Image (cartoon, rainbow, N blue to C red; front, side, top):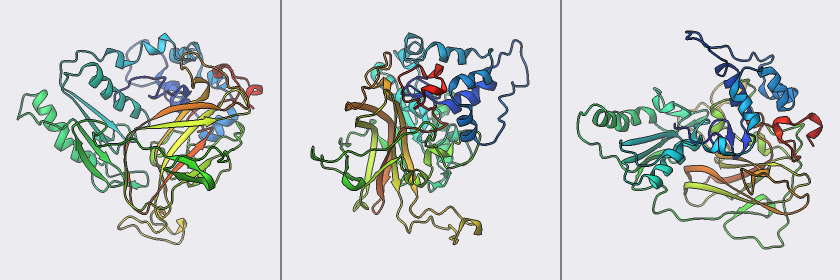
Length: 424
């Protein structure tokens, strides 16, 4: 899971939005100075409650977390010193060095890597563009961060993948590749250009390029009655609206926890569908399988009442109401035991956030003019998923994803220095 750009999509920022949970939890321990070698790692922050949503909301703005963090963690200071995508961030983008690469390269990542999904896709693409003669291969499985090295890759959270994908990868790709290129044993495995696991149909597929040559661009539009349409709506279509309140941000998961979950990448989104501050659009049940492969582009026409806002787009697979995995034990309620109720499950396939003030430039933020319709356009990391016949495709729009991402005060300010009065 290569790291490329910590401002655009890996680990600590996504499209300029600060990934508060990861940065605070990780660097409160890892970032502490270690002036001499030690066998015991530094202790991280001790959360007073085991509820990250409650703790983060009560902490308020980022300056409070800075007080908790203390004065010794240099990276936290760097965050404050570089709130925008300046030369400091740009110089640290690993893609800038991807030229004239001689060794054979195997880029491996997880479709559901909460830390570095962005990095795997985009490092591969950078090598292809900037070092075209490199023997560069891509493998993406249905994995969380590091699950390709685990003993079991047959599920993530409530979603099952049909077989042990990690074991298959280790035996059919990793071991032959390492034996030949690192140990000089065996024959050239002659891997395909891209070996990608497609969730939904739960199949490995091999391609001569990524995205596959056979893919065709397809636009889908919001339509009336919370629908999705393949046809462009008329100019008379009424807009959809919601109220985003920083005092009641949309949680990124229904779970109560204090450490960011890896399972949120495939979580059930029914909890979000029930909120009035989340717009939900969906197709009728599909008459045929629908496969998406490659980058998803969100193209919003948005008008807000403030001067800044975040926009979260979630691509979701809605399972049929009668769906269940083979062997699952059906029970009348959760307290009876048995498996998670998968009928009607709203599986997060891909989600991404965009900090609105960077809609025109990540280096030079600009405020919204209240009431003015503006374009907010951004990429979601690549997907490889088949929506099966009878399933629905759903898209959700919201303006917070808390506390995964920090709260946007919805006023045009330096969020690292935002005060409680700035949140509106």
